[in-house]
Amino acid sequence: MTLAELENEKAASLKAVAEASDASAIEALRVKYVGRNGSIPALIKAMKDVPKEERPAFGKAVQAWRAEVEAALASKGVGGGEKPVDADLTLPGRWRNLGVQHPLSRVIEETASIFGRLGFTVADGPELENKFNNFTALNTPAHHPSMDRSDTFWFGDDCLLRTQTSPVQIRTMMANKPPVRVICPGRTYRRDTTDATHSANFHQIEGLYVDTKPVSLADLKSVLAYFAKEMMGSGVTVRFRPHFFPFTEPSVEVDFSCHVCKGKGCNVCKQSGWIEVAGAGMVDPRVFGHVGYDPAKVSGYAFGFGVERIAMIKYGIPDIRWLYENDIRFLEQLG
Ligand code: DAH
Image (cartoon, rainbow, N blue to C red; front, side):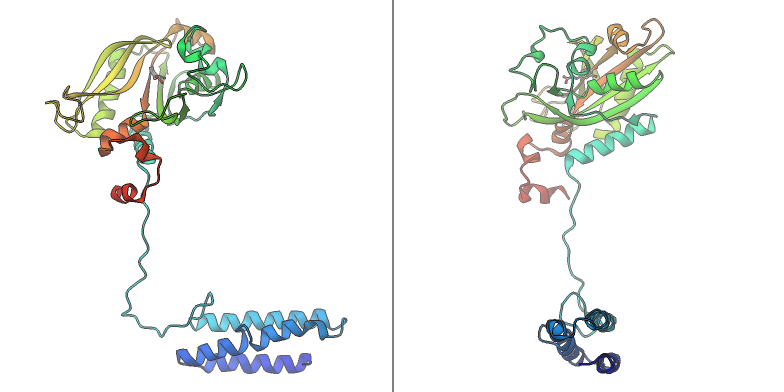
């Protein structure tokens, strides 16, 4: 075929497609020109017989022909190699299963949104941390059990998978002057054997508020009470129990009143009416010392939630492993 013949064929093919009105005629033209044994693929196969000096121009013309015929066919509803369908507007649409957000992502996004309304921004830190950020600056002494090889995934002497999101407190204060208001969601790691409530890899959300104006435990409690109501429902209240964490003084464990039985006692709260959700406290002055803040001039509070824990009580998930197994029977119930 010469170039001139090709142009004639092309014009004829485009005219034919433009004039074709029913699906079978359009399909026949598709097969004739661009189908597997159609004239355009045949020309491409025969390219090697075209004299070398004519080949570039000829190849270009064939490609242009193919593109134009395909565009013309596409405008008639032929695409992606599928069979054309007569335009029947009464056909039902194609059903696509919509995915849903994973409960852990949902809890993290909702928490960011709730604290966002209180002026907190989201801070981030690496999962591979150094000893200073994960332990030393958080006032955790070398003899503390969490420093142990049996409790933490170490890579050499100064590198570990963070055991908590608390090191993001350190990173945030080192990089910013007070006031500081952040939450820090992320993955954390411990050498735990997996069972219904433990996983070696889990998620936490850290919170940190530091100001040059005096900050008190009452501020912490009011913020957590607001969070509890927004996250779990308007009737939920918060209680503090004394506890110990190396990086806060005083330290508390935070319980939410059980959102299922309203505090009366049920299986979810193990008949106690309360569910433990977080650790918290007033930032220890020694922590301020480690990040270059003057403990005489600043004060603040910190808290740390387990994301899995919140998700499990909020959505009634009895086993932490369900969150990671990708079992469609579980995931389908989350919509
Ligand atoms: N990092 C602690 C843990 O993993 C939780 C925690 C307790 C975080 C008290 C805090 C805090 O910020 O103030 O067990």
